[in-house]
Image 1 (cartoon, helix red, strand yellow):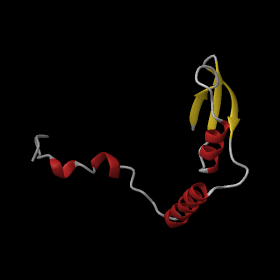
Image 2: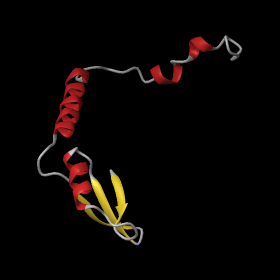
Image 3: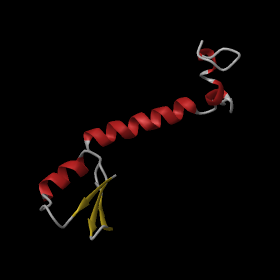
Length: 86
């Protein structure tokens, strides 16, 4: 999500529409506070590809059980028994 201040530089409506069509959520701010969100009613090509990739990842990971220690121990091979680089 991108935040764009509406004061200062003029915001190009054409640029906003292109960004939103590409799948980006845009928040307009005024005085440092978010005042409006602009998002697409129709998914553009990039947003559609992104949504399909996320859905495919969710399907691929269904039923996968992760070992809770895998991230914590994944770098162990880099160190010896004294904790020094191998």
